[in-house]
Image 1 (tube, rainbow, N blue to C red):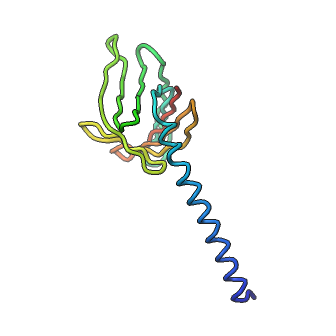
Image 2 (image 1 turned 135 degrees about the vertical axis):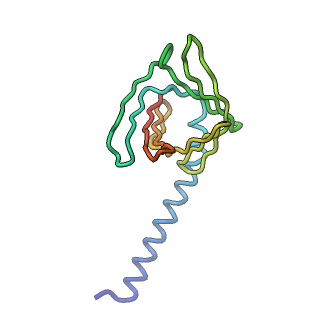
Image 3 (image 1 turned 180 degrees about the vertical axis):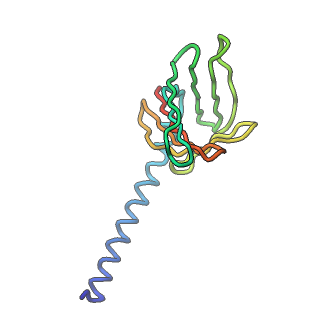
Length: 141
């Protein structure tokens, strides 16, 4: 049987561990915001229905038809561009980050995404669509 002293020691160790984890996450936040800025090209999108069954997989090109890219700027503005009819077609918006949450807002609505992977050259986000389905989007620089 554990004594009150052992219980208190276990509680303090757990609390100290939580404090270190929280500090580490806070320290990484500026780096995440800095690393996400720039232009990203979509390479793949995998769609899932509400029950998480894969429903569609689409591959995108870097240039030409079926190309899509977005640019996030340090001032909070962003630009999404799709290539069709022989040219890039831009849509301007803004973005905000809170932890690993990325919210992109356009005049016709917004996308709420969770950043799953972010490196210098790779970005993976999980986005819940308005109909309850999900999409996982893969980007590269």
